[in-house]
Length: 251
Image 1: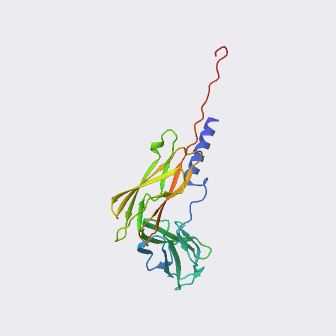
Image 2: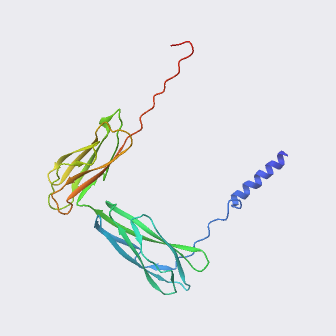
Image 3: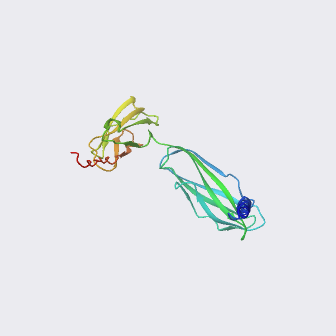
């Protein structure tokens, strides 16, 4: 019996090694038949909030019709337009895409994944890259204030944000205003008209649950009349005190 069990284990190990028990291996990818003259679109320096549109031009260099089965994006900031369902041999078409820059600050590197196939055969993948450098007239680092407001350590519930003026002319920031009574902020000028320091802190008692709010500052620039900083204060649940039951006969 022991020899039989050993033989069965050895056979199972060999089957696992060859992949017979774990399913067939991934099907091989066919060579990509679509050719793109410029697979990388670099928009360069772009102001936040701008929507950038580009059309990738693709050509079927093969001898068979290529079907585009899907166009996937690496982030929600990329919105693909309507793409052709099929391209005959020698036929060209455009793949439009729009980049939404509002959520970004700094370098952006995203991509499109174009999935294709020829007839019922295996598919191929084409990658198209999109890049940009997003800037804001007033750059806040970090872009939002996030901290933990612990009741036993209120002094730790602070966040310091550096604000840098990216415009050529100086910009004056007014006193900050908070949207929530549990949040306050103070502003300090580091370099007049060019750089500021915003200190956001929690104001106890915070109550229960997390606190969401924002700190707003009016500015002297028509390019950005108001600068808003989102604030998220994490308020941990109070710890429950446990009382041990007294042993029989003890007070």
